[in-house]
Image (cartoon, rainbow, N blue to C red; front, side, top):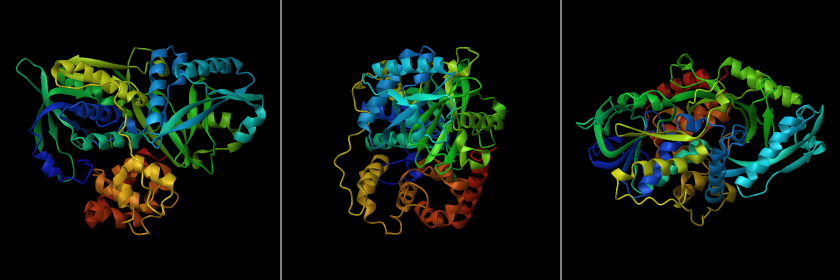
Length: 532
């Protein structure tokens, strides 16, 4: 579908105008592509974005939910990456406080692990100095035991604390897209680039796209632009193959376990040191559940599912549980306590190192036969990446007005929170869906203003995102627009009877379409988000 600020535009209408002359084509609808789209439109460029699957389908909905500087990158000597990330984290906290929230992290200090804790103590000092703030300190063993009653008490000396931030990664992508669309940008999901168009001298000048929506019938179109930008993340090399470029990426899989908060409750985030290999891992409170991860493993093609989605492997489940049982033995966590799982692929530019965790998270820009590729990097540094890639195409776009100090997000005015809506809920939903959702709130029946059972969403939000946020499949709605598939037992299938009465009229699905979508979602969730 097509995302628009005001209404769900008929896909047919947009397909008929693809033959316009565009300044920029962005390929890839994750955080990198969304950041480029917004900045390009803001800089006066006529820009269109194509995504092969759903917006935020790949890495950008499967991260650890952190906006962070990467404390562990200091250990690998990646000071520039950390400095850049810390600055961007703080900027996002200032400009989008209802979407990016500060999060305290605690590192336990046990006897026998003093050398590691000493390194972290030095690391958090450097971390804060890079961010020009002083937000770290020490905790006593009594304080640690009070905060984490399930922690291993043997040899517990205390702990360290520092601050980073967290977000809903998929909503961050959608926020950027919504703001780009309000300025005239265009983006289409389920529209893969199947070929690159080239001039007579072999320079890339456009793309051939295919409609893979339900009603698209596989039609194709050719779209031309002055600049074509490859922002496809883990699938970067597949597109670069069209210009005979050699592979440069190392696909690394990061997998997570999600626990209900009544089985694993933490008042703030915890940094764990895995007892087996001393890797850093996190326990993160997020939207009423607890996320634990991440792994960092090479992802061979044979681990792809038939849905082309990565999934956690049995050995990764054991690995994460091993760390939890060593750090929080009092929780007595087992695989049966796991609510859901998710796995994502990191687009790491390979330096040929043996240890995946030591590969650099810096981004790179490649220009090959006119195709401009940006890859690597982190969710936190999407703005820096967008500026870098637009500077790389500036010669092709002399009318571009690129300003480095533009705001990350549009400034939201003073919200008029509707009567009867809690202010905290109003500010959160405004950051996610815009002021138009607040304006529509009083028009919703009281029944739809109620929370969905056990979830941080209302039924009205479900109706809104179904109508106005380019949903093509039920999993777009259940996994990315709202995060029901991660937060609810059994992927939220128990909520389908109530959801059906809202979703069907909003998306104009008949009973047969709903049945197909429900079956598709069930198969997908049990294949890729349940325990293996």
